[in-house]
Image (tube, rainbow, N blue to C red):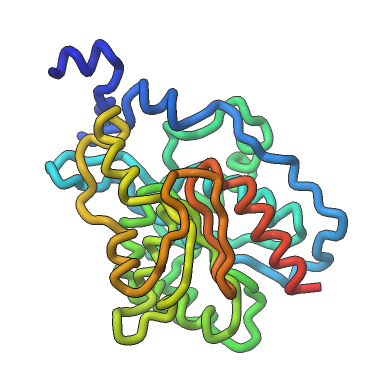
Length: 286
């Protein structure tokens, strides 16, 4: 079977730290050297530097699968990059934090290296990603009524399931944003981080509808070697148990707004999600 997987290029690729990246076949099917970024042009971008978006990234790389093998993940570069490009083009400032201030981990294997705009963004923000702010420090000092932040953004990548769903600091941030009537943005696996917002008794997103990466698709991806094993847990299932409904059945370009929560389904949604978020923030901050 191992020989056949190698022949069909469905065997996950080992990494130097004992984990696995997606197989050559799955990379061909699930990633692209260029994105569908639409240029990020806005007729009336926000003028000023007093409206900011806080981007909460994971600082963890390896996810232990149900079979014990590790998947090399992090923040998906398209799901982080395209929304950032739209928000910046619309005139909003962007600040990056991780739970402890350790470097934000980006899935290098998914980087669209032939997309000059995206690559420039990662060059421009290399220092910010390597030396992000600390979410713990932010929560300790910046949850105020006079905060300049208009939104909290949690990008996708399976890494969003590492360290964020159980973060007390992220829970405090999300509840503060909710109480301040700020927007919350999450794409693909990013909605897993919403689990930090509370338990069944006081979950602030109970009754919400979202677009997110379906558990059913995660279940299928080991067959082509995208994942080296089945998921250790299902974030969609946990959100559903708290009263959240996922509106899409496929890993498609679906986006959704429910009150102040803006969500997208997959990397295919990244451009539309970014534009939807930017236009919604512009409309709310004229």
